[in-house]
Length: 516
Image (cartoon, rainbow, N blue to C red; front, side):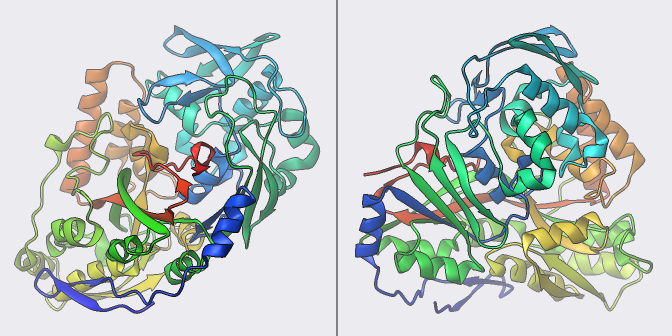
């Protein structure tokens, strides 16, 4: 693949443009895969643990979604909560949910699903000792109890208005007997769920394979897949992904560079489409000083300078493209509680950035490590260029997603660039607690913000929630703890023989795909 550079935004914004060196497409191989009823997917990042509770990567969420079901399901078209492993539910009070469970459901190992599996799953992940990957997703759960042969009751620590969304998107049910027998590590190597696909191979370095689960329960919200087998390979980088697609060795990839879409669409057997998602790209300074002494990011004026230094609108419109937006608040605009009017607003003003740095004691700027896993790499390079133009000499260190997450959780990152998709939950309780709740991703460690975020997530009163979140957003933006760069617009590239539809929640549903 060849690339050329393009200058945008006063020469600071570089982007890869469309000069793909296109190899011949192996149409015969692609047609053979269609005949074999196998879909071959390429992912850029490896997933160390495909158990959804021990993964915080979007790729891991996607992998798990094909094989696991929760008590309820969110319809991707309407966002309405519909039955899954539970057929009915009702609130007994503000902190108690009762479910009637579906009968006759089988796990992939042939065992029958029942209330003991639900109680085991909920009580395990509600226990802080379980050390799930994203504790804020489950911190609201007190536990569960069996109330009958086909019913369970969930107890909440406090009111949780978005409870059903969490149960639909990030709370799959484990098979109690199997997981107890093989243990957490054995389960990660050979996971078992109730979803429309079952795992036939899990390799943390190369990928996963699935086969259609023909005993998927009647009336399941995901339906019986049309495609028999899926192979999902972990590919090392974007160039390798594109090469594999063009040569016919994979049928589907995503998050390609938008500059490549035109070239892909010129290919007779391929197509590229875009869809905005709920993912927000961000820049996060270490305001709390977790990464060590002498950290410039502990100074408010330095953090505010980051805002003024970056032309976020140019990033959104000229690099991400496809309708990308610049959020004012540290959340996705449609999420409940994302009170944009409360945010302090910053416009692109490099002169203001340089003045703030001088006031903070850095008239000649400073050196800093900018850690990122963001692809295409030109997006990280663009931010690096903007920072360097005002005197912040950022050394870009591009890491794999898993390595970046590990360093972030250990508090090692002085300035990091990443993205957060909120597990596609349309409520700020899926983003603000992760970055401001005192956990590993909290680089602000501001007790007032943490208190406000907790207050917003602990009430069923919508107005009280809005007030708390608005106050939190005001302080977060005033202190420049977390700089939202742009919304993501996913760019997908796949075979024209594949009937595939992207969804706004950034969750590819391969069980709905089919060969034409």
